[in-house]
Image (cartoon, rainbow, N blue to C red; front, side, top):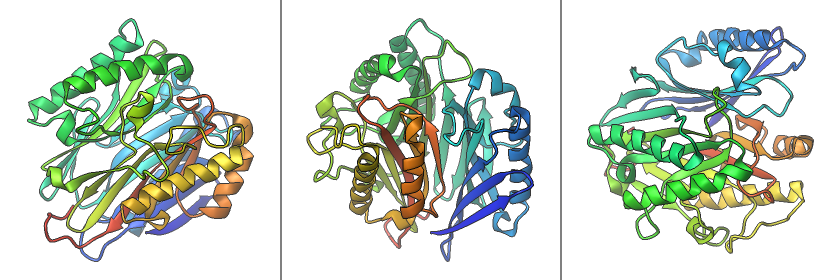
Length: 380
């Protein structure tokens, strides 16, 4: 992995980039775009991001690269929805998780070289690389009466679309991101509905679950209590997917009543994609480690992530992007200092998003890419 940092000082925009560029095969680029001036009006902050992205895409690094996914982290989804623009076929997601530097909006973007991106319908984007078709669903939501009904409805809609493609939740969905409004109150209902739904889909401790982040987040409609983004692959063999456990550091999630995998690995002929789920300061008994201590919780969270990456025969040097969720805005300076000292190059965004247990002060997720040479599988 190589990293680059771009500053557009006239816009007060910083862009952090990671490049995975194998000798033979498609280049992958992850970008984090951050505003640096919280005093700019909302409209100007969104405008400056769009100008910066236009400049960035004209760079030689982005020749033949298509944007696959664009996720906006915003401070006020209801009022800022009008500033969100769609200028291509990429998947668009938006979640109210305010950037912790006091600005209105930050953006994560994912680019892949030499592929055609297709917007199939609202909220569904796909692209094909070789033997595989990659399918992204964004902003799955429902406006039913309560969190359980909404969770059921969005999983129903998603699995129906997979079934129409002759795919399944169990065999083809690699990763979910689930955002829950008022997570301290509503999370339990989402967990109950998801667990019961997964049982119907033969997702259980004896089989496997799905890598996931379940975290505080709001959508542009206030009545939406749960919001979901997903990533699935058509043409993937079950032998190409493995799940991460790191039992020296973490326990199975079902032991404390939730149903997701700590991480998932997808092996291709030329590379390995590693999706680390939202990870917190926890031990292998399911206990919170270092209560009330944000510095030591940050250390333990990253130690857990390192253990998961090691199990995937990868490391922090392979991390393409990182999303950091904080419960308490007052912890921003401590965590920013720690990350800048230890992981200054990795593209990252820090947002306000309380974790599902109040005692967890921080949660981190990441994506890593490792070059491989595996003749058993087709290349990415």
